[in-house]
Length: 413
Image 1 (cartoon, rainbow, N blue to C red):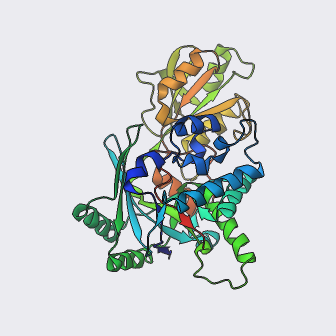
Image 2 (cartoon, one colour):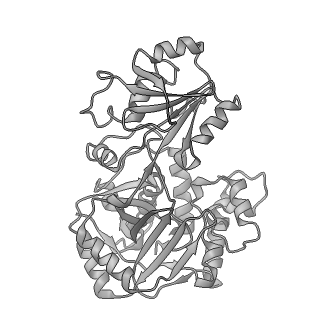
Image 3 (cartoon, rainbow, N blue to C red):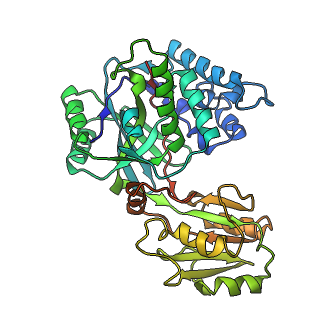
């Protein structure tokens, strides 16, 4: 069973929340962060992308970047740009994107339980990215951004959360410039906080939906802090890390599409013939695939529909039956020569939030030769893979909407 506990968040005053709130560090590059933060001295990018306040040619792994982020966080606290709540509290965070709404609980989860695999993972992490995030956490002594977790829905937890949001005015209600609405409630009722914590103790597992590097770095930061603590205790804040936890039936995974630069030496006719040995090919009446084991393929200005043939995958294999694995095993590797999509420079990936028009644009421009539109992976598939102790193929899931940073910060002591 899992531990979810309240914490004393550092949060912005209502008057500053619109300026502070920022996209996660890993969905923008340095130039984009600088553009978003221009004219906004209180943007949270000054903490999460601290290189924007340093010379342009600085390496993002330079020591000065980490200390700049720490110094800005401490200054925000000194100047009242971030103010700590006096008691440990839970918070409710709702996001609305078009007609889709998801509502989660903001709290802290256990690094020990992450290490014990009670918080399940479905992706591999890269050591260089882990190293970078761990340095940020340790240097800032904070979880500046939350991990995005999910759990199999519990009616009693939903009822407590929705009862609170139905009766109480939100603390923040922010319409972001991308059209996504972010609403935050503070639960100041100690009895309710206690009931929520108790209810989560009946939840057997949590799952990392988005934020594998953040969760891994939080666990590494715990080990680092514990090593230098002369009196380590299970109650130390560094044993817990910041998360927003959503019930699985409210989340939406979007498609994560593929683009390849060339046909691996094949002519168009040769390529189509080879694809036809493992897929049924037909003219596409719509670009988006109609279901699992279907794929949209854009080539030479035309959309085709691919349908994986029986016998080309094992429907009982939680990994092999994923559409991303079917495409990789039957087309990308054997025909296009993409043996390792993690490292091959000939392949690129586009999250579904960009739309299928982005695939057409990049193929029509000549930058890419062929594109594949994927049917989204489901939460049930993700959980089945995590439960089996296996790892999803790379670029299997794209979650939207993204959490906003700067709404709450967890200090490690």
